[in-house]
Image (cartoon, rainbow, N blue to C red; front, side, top):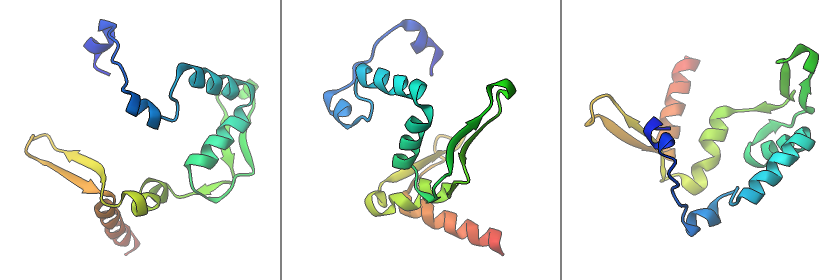
Length: 132
């Protein structure tokens, strides 16, 4: 965050339209979620991961930890996922023609927008390079 903005103490109001689309749309909802993450971390993170991540194999345990050996935590033990699939493939049907990433080089005129479809095509090309 821009340091000057964070030090000004200004509030930037969120539009009602934005609030309607937000997953966490109120301080009450945030506090509710936070409390559950403290009281039931495995249930909370298991629900979040199940809702927002596509798993090719569901995990056996959400979290394994030993506070005496902190910070030794293992998450989603034996779960299998594909980061590329979660970032790109699963968005192709609904968001294929929408901008997925904006590249901006050091020169302001050096920029390019990639849709999900275009980025997916480039990723597939590079994956084939790695396979060769």
